[in-house]
Structure formats: structure tokens, C-alpha cells
Length: 238
Ligand code: 1GP
Image: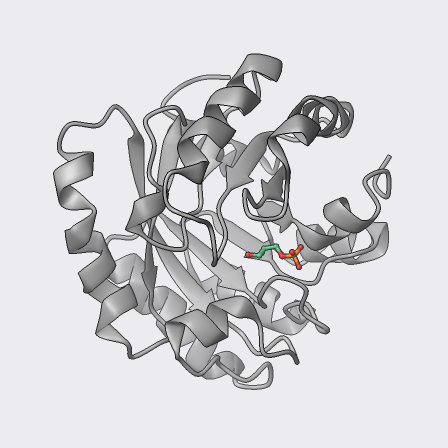
């Protein structure tokens, strides 16, 4: 895989090559399980492994990613719930701003807190506009961020938020229904956002079937992120 990873994602998006990322949460996965999980992720031909979660204990991510790196060459991208989850053992970081929310903690405070670490870090930093869409459950990200998601039917607001993110210089837009969402991001919303941005689009939250995965791709997702379905039925995509 060519580095930097953002370039790889941009090229894939231009060529219409669809990308898959598997999300693993250090809070839910034991270190001893990493070897077997890495094999399964390789079998799926996933392009990236995302590591992160809402309730990860301080210091856990470092050893977790280090161990992951012992068993797989798939690039690891941090998808942190907060700045304590940063580690140089990963390849890149989604530098998230929660654009759908109005909580300064996740718009700028966490980002400032990460600076002392990032100034001396080797991580590739990827500015990412993170947009929460109502997935029909009170997901961890909603509880932690104390923000209101955009309703699925408010396609106009979701699209304007994504465009504003692009104008602000974000390199990726991530439409998130929340981990374990009852309803994944609806296809009209994906399609409308995709039509209106020129940067790659990530979609995640509540995708549990091959059909939902291919619908997300068909409607414009350049990358799909799957976590819960992989945890529950590790073979569902094979
Ligand atoms: C959550 O988008 C990811 O941040 C993945 O969601 O766990 O529902 O697959 P799931």
C-alpha cells in the first residue's frame, strides 16, 4: 500500500475502488484474541484496521496496536474516542471534528489536548469531518459527546454539514450512525452527500449484512467501517 494513507484513499476514491475497514475496540477485545482476529481481518481483505472506542482505558491502545502490528501488515488507523488513545504504534490518525455536534470539547478541545503528543509523533494526521446521523439507538458516541445527531430525513442539513466540513479543509467526511446502530445511514443521504463533496466519504454504524454493505458502496461510500457485526459474527462477510 502506498503511503501516505490519505493519498491511497483519495486514489481509490477517484478510481471507484471500494475500501473496507474493520473497527476493533481495545475495550472489547482481549490482547490474547488479537492473533486470531488479525487472521480473520486478513481473510476479509480489509484495507485498514481502525482502532478506537468510547470507553478505552488509558494506556490500553498502545499495547493493543503494538500487538496487532506483530500479526498483520494491514495499516492501522486510530479512530480515537479521546486524546488518551493516541499511540505512535499506529500508522495514521483520523483527526476528528464532530461537525454535527455543538459541544466544543469534540470540536476543538480534544484536538488541542492532543497537540503535545502529536508534535513529536510519527502518525499521519488525516483531518476528518465526523457527522453523526440518528441510528435509532442511544449509541456510546452520543452519550459521550452529549450531542444531538442529525435526523436521517434531514438530508439537507447533513449535506450542508459535509460541504461545510470540506470548505473547512477536512480531507475525509465520515457519516456515522453510531456503533451498533439499529438503522445504518440511509442510502439517499449517502448519495446526496457524495454528490456534493469532492473528498472521499466514509460510512459506518449498524452495517450487518452483505446487502447493506454493497448498498452503501453503490450509493457513494468510498469506505465502509464495520465493527459490531465483525465482533458478533466474525465470518459474516466471508
Ligand atoms: C462505529 O462506524 C463504526 O464507529 C462501526 O459501527 O459497530 O455498528 O459496525 P458498527
